[in-house]
Length: 108
Image 1 (cartoon, rainbow, N blue to C red):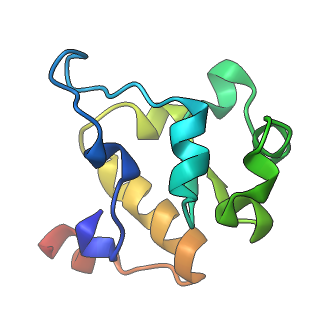
Image 2 (image 1 turned 180 degrees about the horizontal axis):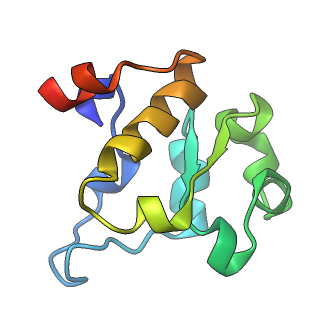
């Protein structure tokens, strides 16, 4: 994420007791007021920009107001491997509007 000029708000949370997967409360996320929200549970849990905006308090988050709730393919976002490049391309395109050259992603 740092290579994309982004940081993960979950990095602020102690995940030593959650096997590396921090548990974020809705209040924590609203309080952090992220610029972008990446959804990796669109297929399994039927989540999208509208369901995110309907959560209590979430309509005031910068990402929601700016239309920067990015729906990712669950299969790509949750399985590390060669397709992680597809994930990076999707995120970069959603954030910048530019499709990055895969060779540049691979090199970095």
